[in-house]
Image (cartoon, rainbow, N blue to C red; front, side, top):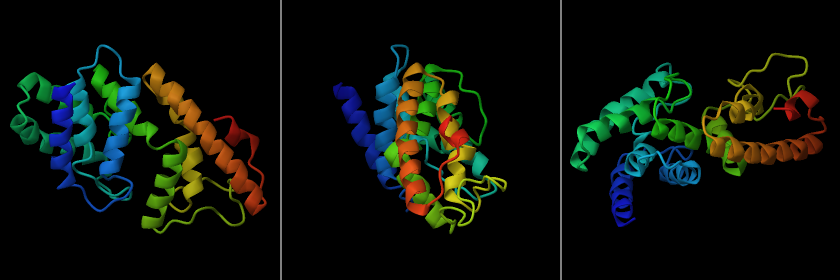
Length: 220
């Protein structure tokens, strides 16, 4: 435990100096991902590798609308090598950490091949769900000048979903379906619980704006 505590202190110090001004991908996000990872980790995971991957996975954080967004996790893995070497990681541990980092990304579409990679991917996606997921989604939407919802058709009953314009559309396009794609049992369980929080929010939003939530949104 002392070794992990010391490693966490060093990792947080390193990333704190490198994080960009992005409230959805800041040090608090990394802390939450590590917390999620611990909650769903199995006994096969190397916790030092997992911790390093959690704290270094967003070293290169490109905006959601950047055409090279799908390359961010690969770039983060590359940048992490010298950091991990300075931290005393041996080559197998460096490679394991890099794989977890590069395969965590939704847009990179790299299959996770290790326990640490599967856990990190689930842990990162969990932070897009629940109460914090709601806050992060709207934070990103605001930064990209996207509207919260379509005034005339909030739940896209008579139009195509478009999360490049409307934040709530992103929920149906991606977020509400994340539990089904989780790779760990703990991840699926937590994701299901957090989606229920989001569905409760949608019901409250629907009542306030006068547009009922369609049934097919509730069955995500």
